[in-house]
View 1: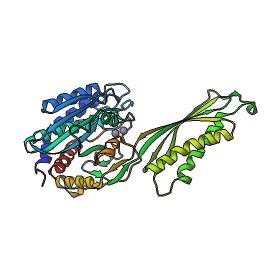
View 2: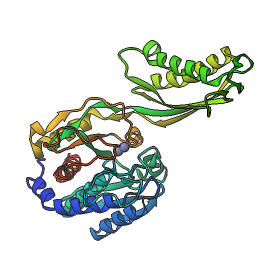
View 3: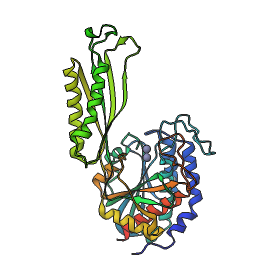
View 4: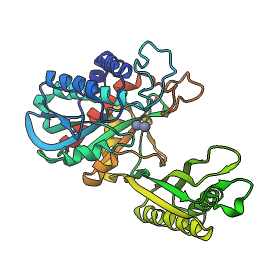
Length: 394
Ligand SMILES: [Zn+2]
Ligand SMILES: [Zn+2]
């Protein structure tokens, strides 16, 4: 069934409201599991539209259910609501009013866009065949808010047949939307290694066990996991992001602490690296008379888009924006906790270009100067609304 021809106009028409919501949320950013104001705004908007609303789902999450006038399948659309612990450096009128907290990953835009989608679809409720479930989740940035909402039943009652979401893409220009079949975002795990040595006077190292030197060997050896133990045609990353030890120039400390992250694209490699980080750290420490304690935390799984659902997204997007707007996405080693949803329900995650054509360099996410071209907001609204309608009409 073809999509309604006025979908894009409908999204453009409510554009100013979506921009206003985005700016409101941007000015009042909240960290993961603290999204109280944002959740209240979301719940109020959804109730105004006549949706049935559940709050405090998996913490501060909100679920809205829109039942169409005709029976059919259930599709879930998802946005994340949390901000980052970054001090905003932008001078915009809508800059963050909360010191040290900033919507630097575009989740303000995701939330505002999904509210726009709810409005567009609620306006067509009578013709809608099936149910649309709106998932507004807390704590995407490391807190696994999606998993908490799943534990709290977001995928049940009614059960969800397919799930879709989007993220802003700071590299691509406004007007482009990208999506990729199969694995699209990496898994993300973290580790902490504490090397236990024996401190002492820097001038008498033979009477100590220097944890800094042991730690340096471990950091170097970790570099060989990807280069020597993982197949060269499989993407994987081991990054040590922090190494702390000692307090001054002439004292050998007792311990050194190493922290890092592991990214992978398949579960076998993920498991291999997990095992080998521990073996290397403990083995090297033992060989050098020290010991190492390894705390390895499994985080977000690989985000895998269902190829059929990717085709559905592509066909919906080409119908609304023209084929030239739909571009292929390169795989990313970034992680995204929508992967927890896509582990259970087939679906797809798309990326909406937000770079202004006049910006000579991109304004990357997770930086103090991140911003987006708000012309992208109605595009995101139309993209998700079209995807949901396409899925329900098939
Ligand atoms: Zn982020
Ligand atoms: Zn994000």
